[in-house]
Length: 180
Image (cartoon, helix red, strand yellow):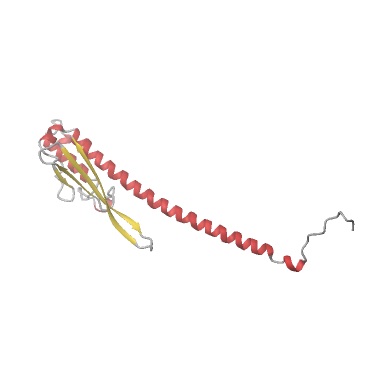
């Protein structure tokens, strides 16, 4: 052996047995932890996405009744939209929509309220075919006395999972206050 030759750096065969198995085990554990983390992120993302969808539907419902109110200024001034609660009895179906003579402002307001109520409750008694836009939802419209300020509120139920994996139903509310 020459003086400048490096010394061999091989381990004896008895010391290197199983070393690749330990590496493989560590890699599998790291991969498993990563996959569990990704599954948790996916679950959180789905829950958040559903909540955002419900808020969007509530916003659309509020916009719907406000647009209907703006389109009927005479009915609005007459107080036809002052106190709406879809949980109570919605107005009866209005046939004036299909007639050539059209609707009076009060009839149009009743039509609008009934159409808005269809987003929340089964006003046409469709039974099993009815699908509300939001689960367990209700809608209200109220007018501040003597003003043109209206408050439109939509409340719905959302499933929430607590830290200890307990399923809970929470009521969520979205309100909008506008001057018409």
